[in-house]
Every structure is written in C-alpha cells, then in structure tokens.
Image (cartoon, rainbow, N blue to C red; front, top):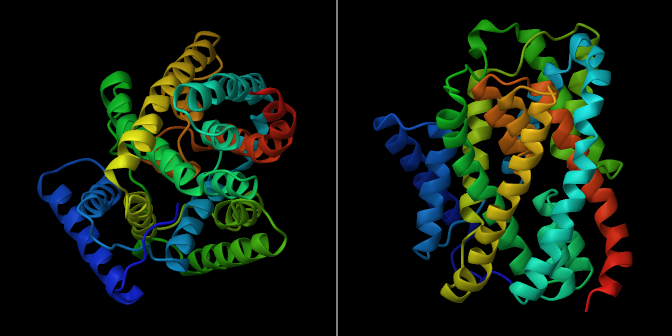
Length: 351
C-alpha cells in the first residue's frame, strides 16, 4: 500500500516540514529536554504526520546529511582502534548468533501471530538497514507499506527508549560534546572531510555499495584518519544538522498512516521491539559478563536500531565509537548479504 498522494507541491510540503521540525527543536531547547536537534524534529514531525499533515522529507539533502555521520565514524577509526580489532573478535562473534535468534523468533511472530505473509514477515523481522529491508522485501513480493512502517517503528521506539536506558540504567549523561565548533577546526581538514563525504557517497553509489551515504564517507575518511591527514570529527554544527535530518526522516515516515495501519502494523512493530529488547538484553548481558565490553558499549553495540541513530547516541554518550560501529557494521552487512539468501531456504519451509 503506497502513501496517499498530496495535491500540494513538494516545496510547500517541505517548507511545512522544516517549520514543524524547527518548532520541535525550539520546544526541546526551551524545556531543556535531551537531544533537542534529534528528538525535537522527530516528535514534532511525528505529531504533525499523525495529525494528517502532508509533510515530506528533504530528499537528497536528507541523504547528504547522513554523510556527516559517515565522516564522524571514519574519523574515529584511528591506528589505536585498528590495533584493537582482534580484541573485538570475541564480542563480534555474538552478532551472527544474535541475528539468527531474531530471525527464528521474528518470522513466526509476524507470520503466525500477526498474520503477515511469509515474505513480509521475514523482512520485517530482519534487523538490517530500513531502506534495504524494504527494497528486498518489496522485490520479493512483500507489503512495502507494512515493511516501511514496521522498520520505522523499530527505529523510532529504540531511538526513543535507548537514551532513557543509557541515562537511568547506565548513568550516562548524554552530554558529551558532539564535536568542536567549526571556528576551532583547521579549514583544510574540514575541506578534506567535505571531499571525503562527497567522494565516498557518490563513489559508493556508483559501485553499488549498500548504505553508500554512510559507509562510503566512512571508508574514505578512515583512510584520511589512518594516514594522519585529519585529527577530529566534523564540526558540532554539522553533526547537529545531521541529527535534525535524522529526526525529520523518522517522523515523516508516518505520513499518511491510517488507524487500521496503526492497529495492525505499528502495534505489531512495537510488540516486536519488546522481543528485540529481550534478545538484545540477553546478548549484552553475556558480552558484559564475559568482560568483552563495558555496559554502555555493549548496550549500544547490540541495540537493533539504525546505524545512523546509534552513531549519534554513541557520540553524545561518550561511548567507544569504534567498538559500537564495528558491531553495527557486522550486523548490517550480515543481514543485507544473508537475508535474501536465507529467505530462499527458509520461506519455502514455512507454511
């Protein structure tokens, strides 16, 4: 089921979206609420979408904003992080087991309990990239609207709940500086970051790299970091802009949602997040108990949210960004490569 078309031109819809998102930022700043540039736009756009306003994402601008996070991750990949990769192998080994457990529980949940067809159920259960799972599921004959709403709900709930868990459960302050002000960074390094973002993004798209807007810039920036050409993350202003765009993207994912979809699809997605939380908690507890990670890093490494959103939370919580991203890259890579292959073997056996 496709989103209903709006008679308004795109520029009008995007203008209204920008105003709603800015108002959300202002409210969160005024009341001192956490992550105002992420949660302000997210909740403002979510409320407007549920109120049937014809909001619209910012297209290529929104995608370009994700390159900033790719650069931030790449800049954190230093020789010291690379030297620790063998130490991360033991905790990374939990990732495929974690994915398998999610698939074994998620497929029957969505198919037998929630009543979705097998293809939709399979790709709804997969904890991979939102866009990738929607594309794969649609190509295989799944329900594109259901897949979009289920994965949007997964990301929304996890991004909303995770900060509370970090704050109340682990004592994190979420006050770590997201980056230095632009005025304090060398101009030539910011120029290199901008080039890395553009070349990595467009180059990644050209060769068919999944998640090109994040992974492409990350790879190019990592090369610059490892060779000593850059020594800092993107400026704070850029990372706040990326947060703003991520918040907008999550909120507008609910434009056109109906009450029937909320009852059947969104609630199913929310119930599945509870299952995911239990599995993630079990894996996190095992990794921490074995001394393979500190609690905050273990939690963020196995939280099944979007890579971009988990990057933001890792930055503001002061977590080991390299550790967190290595695990998310492993998860997303295995799901994107393995989900279509496993579907051919598993779906034929599910009746």
